[in-house]
Amino acid sequence: EAIRISNGTAYGLSSAVCTNRLDYITRFIRELNVGSVNVREVPGYRLELTPFGGIKDSGLGYKEGVLEAMKSFTNCKTYSLPW
Image (tube, rainbow, N blue to C red):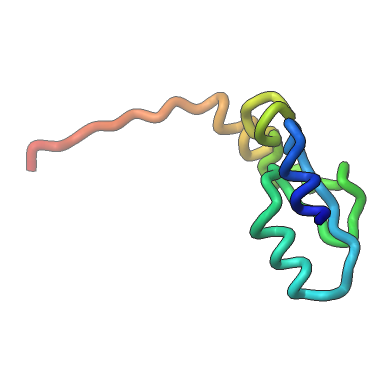
């Protein structure tokens, strides 16, 4: 029921699961339509090196975090060599 309620909202920034049952944890991770799932942590918890941005009507539409910030200052160039 919790998965249905969560997925029925317009938001999907992050969620938290408070259980010790691995089967519940893996089901929540697999089925929740959110940008991140925290297990036995508060919903706002995140590591700076992990991508963060949310889905649906949540977040800024792009991923935040140190690595993602560095990517925003990088241009990708594709090229081919004739041999």
